[in-house]
Length: 303
Image (cartoon, rainbow, N blue to C red; front, side, top):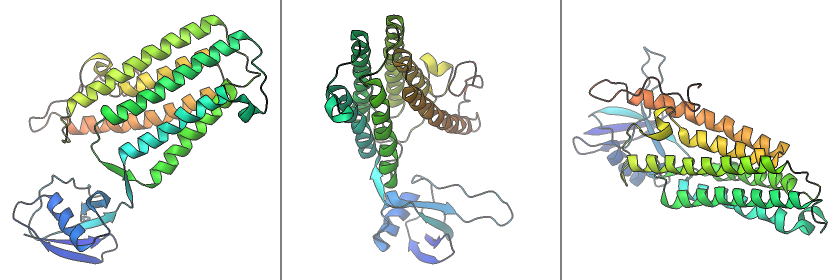
């Protein structure tokens, strides 16, 4: 079979001869051989726009079968980097930066004065342990738990994501560990700690459930079941938002609340996208299972 490729502007990028019944992955390799700059992870292909409809063509996946004498449109995704690399780097910043504000007040605040009370130091130590636990868990999950449907993401994301995580780590740590920090009462500390660690365990179990849905080396997608998955599509985000709520109950800083709200906003957007994909993929047609119609997006019984 022969497959023609054009740029989005209509420029001819070559015609490739493939074996009958080939999938997009075969074209990706052939295209890479002809255009060395564009390795497969950097490529995206679409069908040509149908002039009779305003509907945009859907991006093809590497498993999609091609037909003879078709024309595809190529898009350059730009330089790529491994998802794992991005995650490891973006989470490393909070792991390293936050403890500096607790252990090195002379560097960060220009003073060696201790906090005004033992209660403040107790909250600061508890917050340090909680913060470190969260990001150490994230690094562990990145290395040993998560299975990514796409191996890479755009290179620019490592700078954008690191700016977010590293910047907020310094912002939150500065105020929680400040020598003039005023802590909440012991009751808030106890409640906040219990909520935080309970939600962290829930988040970890949700990630384990997602991992077990997808065999290694595949892009298999199944409907997740069990636990909070019976009520929402993305309980991993639910648990994480609630974990940071617990952190803020025990620390009570504006910086921490802003960090929680920024993260919650982004996670709600991600959850909305995942919920739509679940409903589209598992629509009950052609023998596919029907996605549970009463399952909410991220907050049980609410949204």
